[in-house]
Length: 464
Image (tube, rainbow, N blue to C red):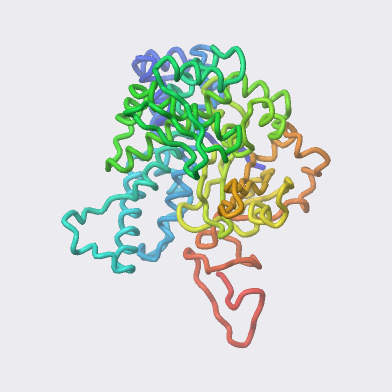
């Protein structure tokens, strides 16, 4: 397999800026000529091995920063957007998209924002949403999508929030819930348990926090931490929100809850301790859940956030889907990216998890670009806690490139070297390149179709 050249001009310039060095001084310290550095920073040349080694040895820089998932995310999102029929003419080549993602990421984000605004406007009109009668008909991204993209392009890791949570948990001398209760008592907050369906309710006037008796211990502790974050970390959360520059108050409010959730997970599973335990247990989610008093979903999500510079864990993808196949949570630190619209590939094992509740499903999978993954899936349906309460049904998927599979206990006894062991999966049907997939739901938008009334194969058409 050919080694892909590393073009990371934007990140190289950012590193130089953080160090406060001119191009001339930076080039001297890296042991390259000034023109050569200039060419690398403008993506006219790939970053050489000599430069990668110099960055690590001379500056102590975590060189994995050069290979973050930003470019892969942008390329995947642009491919999906440009497959929309609104874009006429031939689609840009993959090489052109990679060039745009590397050299002009701001322009790429602007394109995605414009396409999202178009889709929202189109959907409003199609559903007769009275968009023409509104006083403010400016096209804006959905607040939910805006927040999801914020975490997506932060690599799902927020250093300041993560370190603040870890610092708080470092004072732990017993169960985390005891530490939180003491912290809440110091700010005159009383915690009560109620029999209602509401998971959490805080009354700022009486300073009473009420939690449902129906929730699990893991959810109880998580909700305590979330409320503590909202009450004691407001300045940190607001400063982070200021940097994000959300378009609407609704997006900012949703993001604040997301940041408080992040703090809660990071305090429940402090970065250093959790990373060490993940290595020790070979990423056994059940052992990690037991050790940290967390749920399987919380553990899986936390594993996908271990991207601290200089102390990174395995780059995981994490996704949660409902029985209809709708993606309700998504993040990927790998080259595999999820579709922004619609559901995930039906060939992926996460959809089969609903058929076998309580069991871990393992899968070796290969995407059309030839990258191989180890995939793990499990049903995590949540009881409402009462006979007449509805059950919330979800399944989670967690995975990594197969080169990391031997670090996971779940991959034991699987023949990761056998090419025939890998199932073909894609991102979504509308942009998938596979021509003969038996589970294809809709034709690919980037390809022409041939329809022969006298011949019927697996599909009623052929893809050129």
